[in-house]
Image (cartoon, rainbow, N blue to C red; front, top):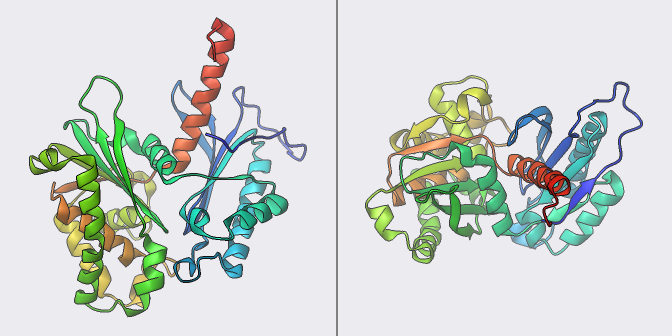
Amino acid sequence: MTGRQYLPPSEHLDHPLAFEDGVYAAVDLGTNNCRLLVAVPDTDNGFRVVDSFSRIVRLGEGLSRTGELCDAAIDRTVDALAVCAEIMQRNGVQHCHAIATEACRRATNGAAFSSQVESKTGLVLDVITAEQEAELTFAGCSPLLDDDKPFGVVLDIGGGSSELMWIDQSGTVEPKIAHYHSIPEGVVTLADQFGATMNNQQDYEDLITRISPWLDAFEAEAGTAHAMKNQQFTMLGTSGTVTTLGALHLGLRRYERSRVDGMVIDFDSIDALSSKLAMMTCDARASHPCIGPERADLVVMGCAILVAVCRRWPIGRLRVADRGIREGLLISMMAEDRFSTRSHIVGVAE
C-alpha cells in the first residue's frame, strides 16, 4: 500500500525515545473522526501503544448535499491533524501511514484538501479505496473474531460509508475476506439527511428499511445464503456506534475501552437500546457521558445500520471491537519491516 512516510528522528525531543525497532504512527482520517495511534513493536506480531489521540471533526459535514468538503470542516480537520503531527514529533515517530477514507474519496475538492494538509502539517494523506479500508479494518480487529464457526460477518459503521465483510475461516490458514461490500451510507451522511426529522419510531424504522437493499446486494454477491440460513457464522462489529452500545449495555457511566473491547452483546439488547436512543431527545443523548454532544445526533444513524444487519441475519450475538484501521496500519507497517529485515539477513528475494 502506498502513502507511508519515513520520518527523520525529531531534533526537538527533550528525552528521545530509544526504541530499537523504531516508533510507528497510524493516522485514520474518517468522515467523522480523526484518530492517531503511536506504538512500538512488542512481540513478533504485536505492538505496544505509547500515545493516542482522537477527535470528532465531521469532515464529511454537508458532503452529501454539496459534493464538497466545507471550509469549517476543513479547518477543524487540519487543526486535529496538526495535533497529530505534534504528538508524533514529541514521540520521535519514524514510520507513519496516514490514510483518509470515504469523505476524501467522494469530495470534488478532496485533492485540494490533501494538499492543504501536507503544506500545513507535513502529513501526506493516502486516500485509500473501500476495499483497502475493509482489509485494514479486518487486519486490526480479526483477533476478536470467534473461531467456532466456518464463516464470519464483520460490520464497520463509518461516517460516510459502512463496510460489510464476509470472512472465510473454514480452512487451516488464517481467516480471510472472501467478499466485501461498501454501503454508501454512514452516520454523518445519514444525519445530514435525516437527523433533524428523527423523532419517532416510524422514522427510525424507515431508516432501518433504507439499508435493506444494500444487504440484499451483499448476500447475493457473496453467495452466503446457505451459511446464513444455517447460522454457520459469527458476527463482529466495529465503530463508535457499536462500542457506545456496548458501554450502555454494561451500564458504564464513563467509557472504558478495556471493558468494551471484546465483549459480547445479544441482539435483543441491541434492538432495545437502539430503540430507546432513537426515541430520546438529542439533548438527552448528549447528556450521557458515553455519548456526548458531538455524537448525540449520529449514534441513532449508526444504530439503524446495525439493527438492519442484526434483523437480516439474526445470529443472536455480536462481539464488539474497539479497534480497526489504525491497528491494521500498524500491523501492516511492522510486518513489512520485519519481512524486509529477514529478507536482507537470509537473502530472500523481495
